Length: 111
Length: 111
Image 1 (cartoon, each protein chain N blue to C red):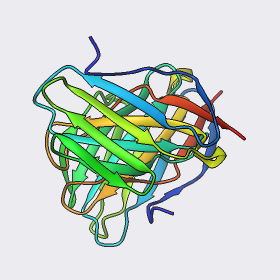
Image 2: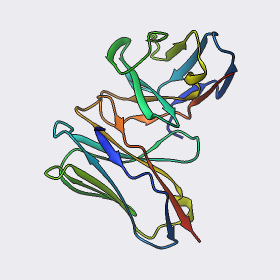
Image 3: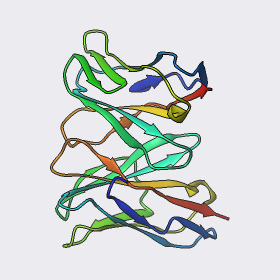
């Protein structure tokens, strides 16, 4: 157990809908990262927050957004969902840089 | 050209064998190197984290970095069936920065 928690474990929804994925980092970790894992693209970086502020962005779609709250938990919002958004979404956390520890992931299925 | 290349396998070995997993990367700006293990559809688990050329050992695992060749390796000694998983290499330009992952190598250790 990495200490990073993610909810929900599974999400099944329809095209055009909006969902929110939640991540709680390890105790004391200030950085939160979001990654998407699909069969064709592998594991890809989406976005990073550090102590509430956006630190770095990857190839994150405009339909996707994220935020980190004062208690350091983070949410990833996915809107206008398409079939191709079906993937595993992982959150990782680190203290102040360095090793990133991953959560168990949220499996999103868009029908 | 991908920033990091990894042979997807699959790789099948008998129990007790020494396993060698490898990645190459394209840019000498990458300074931090990691190996993760991922069991089917689970969160990646950090195995090794290095930032310099040379070897780093942890139990049955040895990570090797050759920055001059842009080549990283993970060796597993006395492999066990429980080592059967996908192994992902990851690289980063800076400490705490986004991770760029290889495609992963699927390893199967047969009893």
